[in-house]
Image 1 (cartoon, one colour):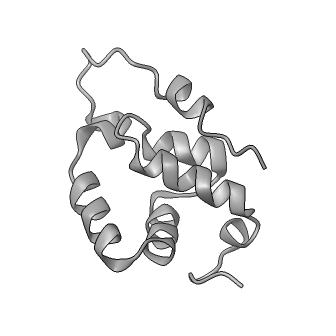
Image 2 (cartoon, helix red, strand yellow):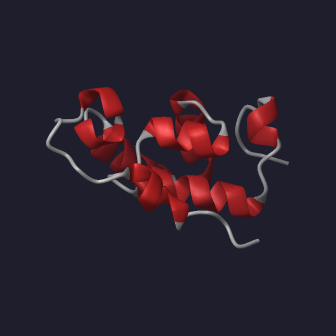
Length: 96
């Protein structure tokens, strides 16, 4: 049983998918939009998953880290940012 309020998308995640979402959420260059494209989770669902899966101190650190971070939202990125977050996220797929 999952520790977070379930939606169909959250309930359908395997342990490997949960691990991949957590890795992508911690990665500065992987946007919430990419996580949604790859895993089907909205930003609020990613936050709920992180709140449930991380210990409280780690969740607070993660929220402080991503709140307002321009690299986590494509619309806020500077046009000079040349990296492709899809390539970064490609290696984040679970092996299980």
